[in-house]
Amino acid sequence: MSQLLQGKTALITGSASGIGLEMAKTFAQEGASVVISDLHAEKSEQAAAELRERGFEAWAAPCDVTNEEAFKNSIQQAYKTFGRLDILVNNAGMQYVAPIEEFPTKNLNS
Image (tube, rainbow, N blue to C red; front, side):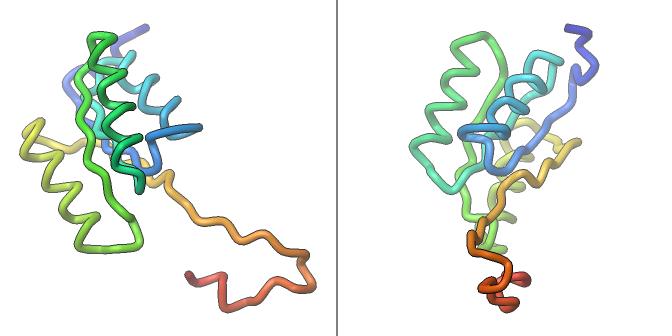
């Protein structure tokens, strides 16, 4: 890899699995220190440990992004651990599945 992100720190929400974890792996391969932030604490720790085992800098900062205080704590943890935060990827999301004619519009803002 090109080490395009060498010396940068990235916090990626929803990164204990799926697309978020793949982003974290790619960012790490490009030289970034990665903060794994996910609702599932155990999975966050496992993902960060997996990256560290591969020689990358990674830290778990589990949080529920719908809780503003918890999210702020994750950001503060990134600063404490790596001394900086350069990149934030808001990958965590919520999903409501329903046919369009039954989809309650109140869910659009949650």
